[in-house]
Length: 318
Image (cartoon, rainbow, N blue to C red; front, side, top):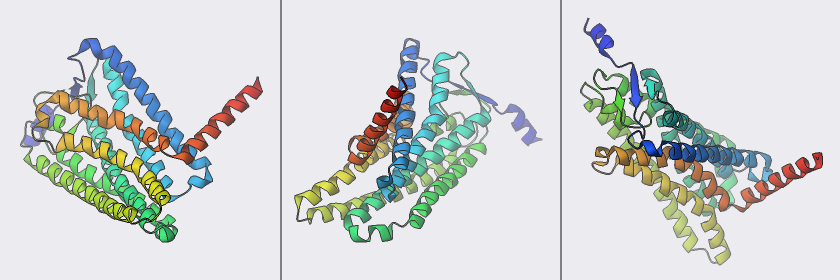
């Protein structure tokens, strides 16, 4: 009977406030986010296509990069369409099930990307510190296992966190002070004790951050030591060039994570959480292809040839 009462009193829909407190910004924000989303899709799809058509890029580094671009497309597409919808539509509702599904996929993709960046750091460590054994160590089988492992671990962690949210009761306010189903925003609406969910989130977040960052830190310590010992400036420059893009992506990604989940009292300001989430789910997926393509000669050369070929074939038709 108690269970039936709980089900009857449970919230079935949530209302996403988004940026409704700034009505004069709705249209400019819609245009800005639509432009960013379009650039994100074009940039990341472009990276995947360029890697596929250029046989020189069929290496472990670009294999991981193509999966990073795929992840960026996916988790940007989970959040951004709903964000665009609530900026132009009066109906800002999202069903409870859709909210949980959105949270599950965003959480899965973010954790997967976190460990994909760690795998890429290990790949750079092997390439710089053991170049002669690189093709042996980073075999196709190992690369496939590492990628499969990141996706599987992301799914397991996300499933655990989603289950902890589903165990909560939502029977009070249904207004989410966010533009999406972000963890702290959902948790704040619970009318039951959220301590178990909070502990689960703390344990999983801390473990994942510590493991991924320690792997990245250890990899780059060995890389720096190896670079310092290089006798030629040419080798040093090449080694630095292969790592600079990845370090930039890592700094931005983990910097936003630390801002969202590790800075004390950051959740007291919903505006801070929303802006940080915008950077995390909308801006970062757009920046990654720019970061990797602008610093990579092979990617730029292939993109130029592809564009030139398309333009040439188009002009010949007329």
